[in-house]
Image (cartoon, rainbow, N blue to C red; front, side, top):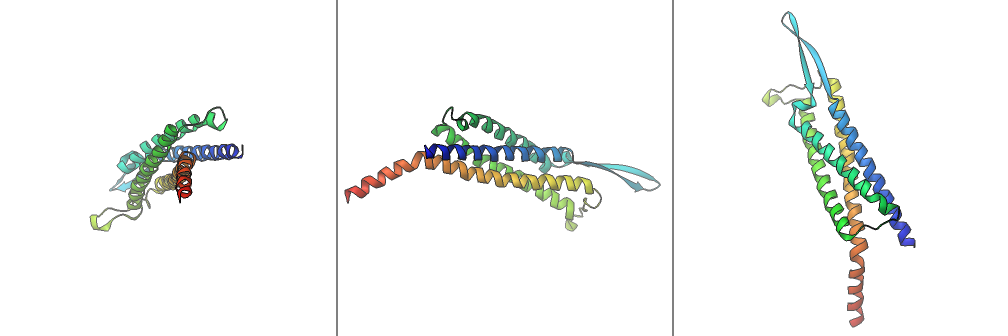
Length: 192
């Protein structure tokens, strides 16, 4: 009975972290989609309007798509874990293996997307004098702040996905493989 309560607590904790991760990915996505700024620059006797937005860079586009994928995955797993948390059913070994593997995959994919966006943001903030790329953030401050917030929130989501990966591994291996290992150890120790 106590192990069942502990399993239910772990399930609720996992569901809460999954929901938080999903909400963080959605927030990161919204911030990135709203990252757009137009600046008027003097050019000769007139002005020219220059606009910068997330879709100008493949690193930000990649982060948008990965945020959508991770948020969808988080919602699907969250909904699929509701019956288990309510005690209506118990997820089997196959579903736990699937969650374990997909948690790993999505953690690494989101990490790669956040890393790519961080590199683009770094170049926008600092520029690169060797290639004569000028820094954009002094001119497009609002855009850079929105993208920075999106990347920071995405980084927190990566950490939470890593925690979920460890949690799903612990859940999988603790519930299905410790008994077999313990039984094997008991058989070998009784032979000596």
